[in-house]
Length: 175
Ligand SMILES: [Zn+2]
Image: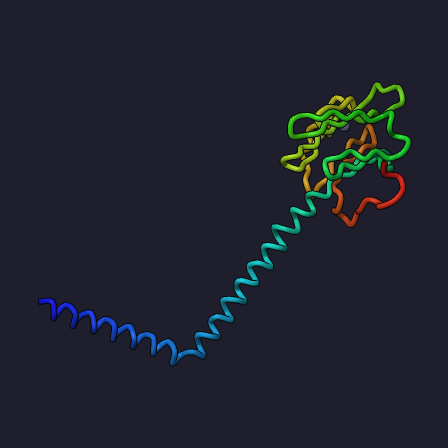
């Protein structure tokens, strides 16, 4: 009984050996397959960089808020960077997972827009406005790395930095 079982085992070992021999004899094809797998793996990494890593970097660039075509402030790295001459017209309040910026659109501070920057979703949205009865800007969906919110009565626009070739200046103006 014992003898039989060890004999069987020997047969299995022999069978495995033949399989290995088969593989080593077709080594040329095996190497070519490895190159193909490596190429596919590199291609997947390339796709991840192009469609996942780069867009998320773009998203982190922040937003630019303009009034009548002039930059009022940038919102980058979770910080409000107000341009000269607009300090008195901006109020910033930190809230949970976000920053709420009130921008007054006249010197009497009777008209304003409130923009909410969501830090977790990296989006911008107008939450309050005194612009018109319809308040189109408040009903505009939140924008992230594309799109634009425009408040025509106040001449106000909110757009993501990095879209449409727009980049903030490195020197001058920014506090
Ligand atoms: Zn509006």
